[in-house]
Picture 1 (cartoon, rainbow, N blue to C red):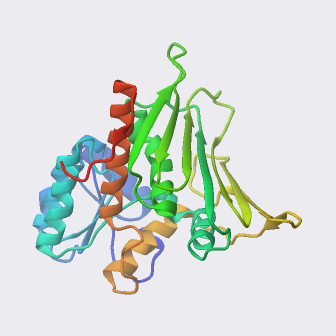
Picture 2: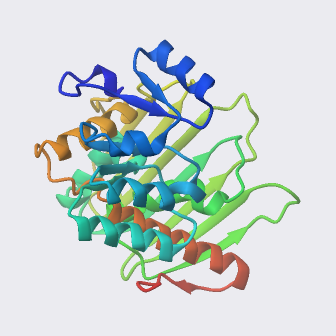
Length: 303
């Protein structure tokens, strides 16, 4: 993706295995290296995209920021709130751009719904429901995967006061339901990894207001990045339903382009600012605590 951008002069991929890394680099037509220190010391390198496993984010984000690089990092930033907070604080201290790949904010339909909500097009909000269904399981499902829907909820509604999480408890089945506590409405997040491998990754949002309802459903039909299949329906109060045409785009390319534009000063960086990823982690950690305590857990501002 970065190679496609005309205002990006060069791209280098860094990996542990020199042979494998340089093979991939040749296939992509870019540079390859197994020496991260050498790359970070290169003054022509302005920015670093950290695509490592979550437990390694803190170390390499700090290395990059310490060398004066702008940083784009996968989410979650960390499994520990303290580490994530330190990354955000370090970026502020060295005055470098620190964005996070908050995928839900890069989806055309989520941007559309958020614009309608913030414009008051649905009237007073009454209820929000979001779901994610997939076959793939991970070690930390609430933080790694359910966090995507928490991110969408934060984008739409702001950070909730607290979270109550339950699970179906059916053996090794992963079915989690989280109720987010907002002052004047309810928000339910549903997440499942019980689907068969033939069932594609899908997610959706339903927002209910006094003046109408918007419902979205998005399906990723293939594993390779491309524009997902999306449907958006608006049900106006007292009127006929409308199938809304949303100009879709490749969300992976969208977020990478946004990072470059933030570096170039073309956008303010607020949309994907890592502070928002920090808030998402706060919600996810509260949801995880709730599952353990079986009660409402406050979304904490501190460490």
